[in-house]
Length: 206
Image (cartoon, rainbow, N blue to C red):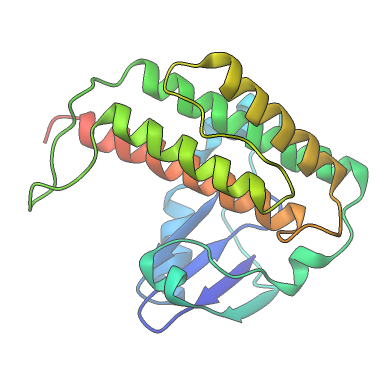
């Protein structure tokens, strides 16, 4: 478990479970949120064919956060992220990222286009949110040495190509990329699932 602590928010990330990351106003709140979200993360684990871990944590590293942390995203690479990844672990992390995409796609498929707005009328509707996720993934790809245009909504071939190349990069776990594979897997899967769960929450009755 890595704790990223900013000036107004903390972020808890399970190192070996990309996508299982939650924020809170402090360390305790972030860890509590992480435990609370294990049932929502469980379908991703099941899709990857893995056993659900316990909701008890050991913090192995604390890192100072930055503006991205305070905004609510895992924005700092930890020392643990630079540790060499055995091929078996790299494959496992990639499988969980692939499972996060599958979970996202399944949620998109049953989500109405128009979503409930926030208290101030904010928030993207479904298709704009999907476009946002695709744009972010094309940007994330550059951090692991890949070049892809942002896939158009519904362009299944371009989306599959981007995802295939990202998974290959994660499995290769090259030490020469801007983002090490463990951090890249965490950031990609967190972003995918954060928006998938947002869709679920905003599509549900108030």
